[in-house]
Image 1 (cartoon, rainbow, N blue to C red):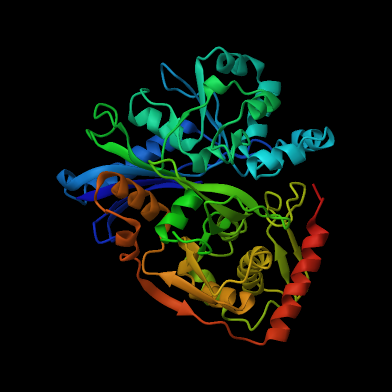
Image 2: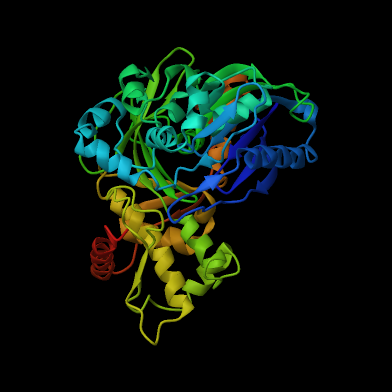
Length: 488
């Protein structure tokens, strides 16, 4: 009675098998290529994502008894938009990734035309290139021949979960869930459905969009002819950050988590109510039960955190891997005045400036790579603090994702936010959440209480440090952020 979960992330696909006690029995992983055709543009080959899914799943299947698998859960990078041919399942162009900034001018135009307040009222979001709707508008304006086939019904439109489900079911199913749908700018958050008004505004034919299904419960069976011989029900779907909220068992109103991935995302469960923020946070759907009950969340979306460390590794080549950053940063007592604003794809919450660009300031002849590495880890902690400063008082913060394994970062985070940081034994909670949803949908777990029993604390980081000095560093960070704004 195990569950296969597939986490289709921004830089690779992870497949895990989760046992009934909530432990990860085995893992497979396959990276895929990133495409940057112009400054600020980010694309993925849909076929690369599919092949990475196949390879990661093939790897994990070699490590487990396949007869024990009962269901599949899927979680994914959310706002990335994919087009595919309904008959051949081939994609006519590369997917436009959530990090992509090409639609900044479209957002400005819509804002100048007076649409932002109504869009925010319906969606809980902002007019920002981050979200899918403006990406589709860009395609209609810049690739009319491709868009004509969307309008004729030949091409389907969807987020990565929809695309993977289409591939796994040999094109039989075109579905998504509310946690992905609500990130498209085409979803009415209060009504819990696609909005005809928004589809008209963004010029997207509603028939091109996937059908909406609950986050757990059997949705569709995989076709063994195309998916490694597996015939299993797809029984759990969620966007990556809502999946992590579920994986952290934050089922009660007010419970919060921060996932450190390519970006960092802080979500707070707001229960059955859509809570609006005046401080740059997003109102979003968390999940919908098979009975139709909606759970909502407030979200602070930070675009570049883990990918800043990846940039140190691949772009500057000053670290060999992410794991060594803690040791390098610990060799210096502070950054010696260096501040790094990692606005490499603009700024998300709470600033929301798509024209911001990355900046390193305070460099002197005495600056070393250790200062820059420490400044990068501090920037991650500062970005999270920026969001938490806008939230109601929290007693603890649950953290997960790859960078949460970094003790130096977790302690830094606790010091700067002045709250305890709790790291669970399993930090791959995005994949875990997808498994929990699928298992809940097929009877592996009977209730949320059963799932809560599986959560186990690895380490609790208590806040410390010199408050005055910490606040002074944070104030310098704020000054640097203001200088980085509008640069693009």
